[in-house]
Structures are given as structure tokens and as C-alpha cells.
Image 1: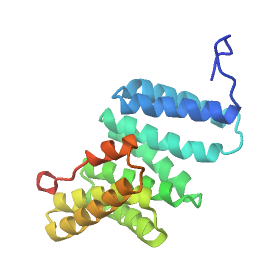
Image 2 (image 1 turned 30 degrees about the vertical axis):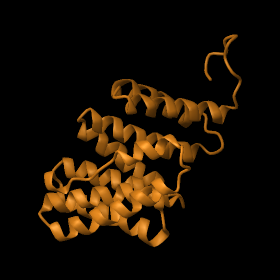
Image 3 (image 1 turned 45 degrees about the horizontal axis):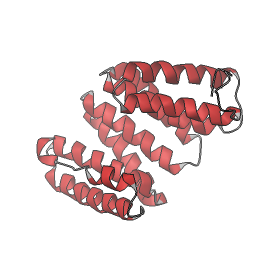
Image 4 (image 1 turned 90 degrees about the vertical axis):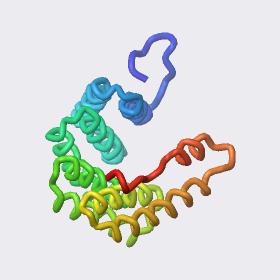
Length: 197
């Protein structure tokens, strides 16, 4: 970690960067988007100033975190900007999970910004990614967003189709975890209600 004080644990530079990004994402997860954004932007500056191995991968996680944090603040302009960078960075890799999540993020932001055609186009790119490349870690989230977008458009047949896919992908992910894993409980609490979209 940063600091170098007597009680600090020595880490490799990459580990330290990953921890700092995780800290920023944790701030966002706890609802502290202002600290999340500050933390993630600071880490981005360090990565861009002195890149090391695998920073390209860390930047994907960082962009996901920044997009979410700006979205939490209701700052669609910055969320859109970060999501565009997220898509650009993800598309430059072979990391299909991140590609799907980048397109899903772009679609959520477009949906909230009332950009219905862009939302649909982006979620279709995400769906194509998870279905053509088998990306189970992203599939449940992509299908959730797809169902919401279609419900918002009033296309309930498509909304139900993707709600069903969400349920199957979601349940499959839960069942892939060990019985006592904390995430089984967390994921089990997620539900999709397309009637209120």
C-alpha cells in the first residue's frame, strides 16, 4: 500500500495499484461516489504517468468503477465520457467479459439519458458478446439490462425473453459458487421486476 510507514505491508507495484482501484470501487459500492471518483482518478493519473505490466487490465476495472460512480451521482455527462473510454479500452483487448460489461454500462447510461436507440444498440452489442463468446460472469447483468430496456420500450415479449435469460444466467452463477460462499446470499437477493421499468 502507499505510505511506506512502519505498519504498512510491502506489496508489488501492481498489487498496490489493484488495491487502490479496489478501494475506489469499494467507496462506490458503499455509496460514497465522491471518494470513489477521487480515488480512481488519482490512480488513473499514476497509471498513465508510470505504466507497468497489466495496467491495461487495471484500467478496465477502473473505467467500470468510474462509470458507475458518476452514474451514482447522476452525472450522465461524465458517466457517458467514462463509459466511452471503457468501451474503447475494452474493445482494444480480447477480454470479452469486460467488453460485454462496457457495452452494458453504455446502454444503462444511454437508457437513463433517454437515448433509446443508443441504449438498444449498446445492449445488443453486449448480448452478442455474451452469447457468441460464452461470458457467464457478465451474462446475468447484460440480460438484466436488456430486459429493463425492452420493458421501458414497451416490448414486453423481448423483455420477458431477456428476463428469463437473466434468471437462468443468474441462477447458474449462484450455483457455480460453493455452498457457504457469501456471494451466494448476495446474488440470491437480486431480482428483476420488468413491470416497473
